[in-house]
Length: 91
Image (cartoon, rainbow, N blue to C red):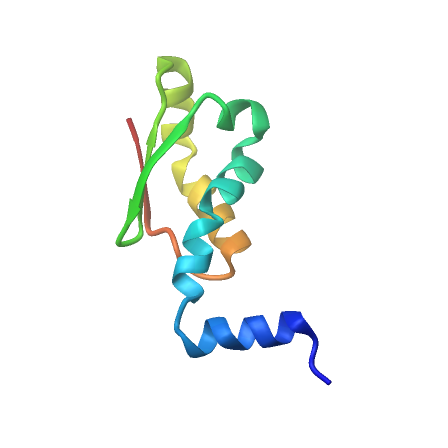
């Protein structure tokens, strides 16, 4: 007998939906990496072709996140289990 989680994991793999599943988890990864408070002050605008675009209305936080974007990218990719995010653009 198979567990439901095994069947779903196999279905996702067979239908080549791993990327879409990881993409749907991106807001959760972002919140985990930057923290709940800061995540609430940012807006993920888009994620296309490995580029994550994040809107940060406050200049101080925008500067801080821009300086840390490579570290953030690495942490998101670690959570995603691969090189999902190639670049983070903070605006």
